[in-house]
Amino acid sequence: MTDRGLFILSGLSMKKVPLQSLILDFESCQNISDTGLDNLQGGLRRIPSLRKLSLSFSQYEEFVSFWGLTHDRSKKISDSGIISLVEAFKRLPLLKSLDLNFDCCNANPGLTNKGLSTLADSFKKLEALEILKLNLRKCFPITDIGVVKIGENLRYLPLLKEFDLALSKYF
Image (cartoon, rainbow, N blue to C red; front, side, top):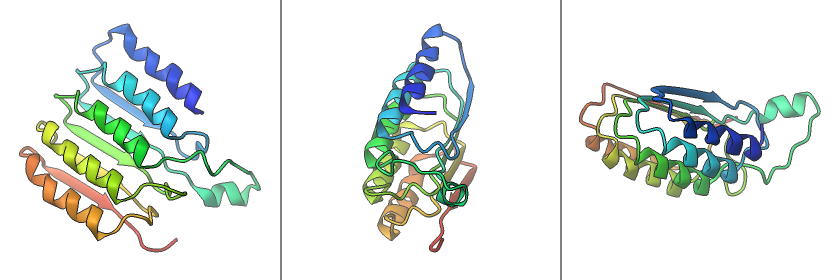
């Protein structure tokens, strides 16, 4: 899958289907970048009926190394991509479950406290959210500053019943 594929996929939301659940798993799709997330958010914001959203962009470098594959390390997800996605979240008033997996999104510049803070600020628009799962394993630019921001903004989720946060310090 590439950024172009996400552009095509985002066009499917134009069909006016009252979609309630969307699960996209792009594990080891090394060619998805911030441009792809921007394409995806364009489609997501046209699905206001969405109640469950699960997006996995884990990028397992160990898999790539083991098989001797190469990939363009510049094609990674950074704060810019997260900021694009957040714009879509603000237009999903019925969203009850949000599961984001950014395992290994740590290339330069990668996902940092800035992106995590922007995500945390979006909680103010996600008042219906009951389940929040964040996988940030191996996102090494993230520090206590970003995690604290998430924790502080959980108060804007009055219906939250489940919160999962996955972090790790080492490979």
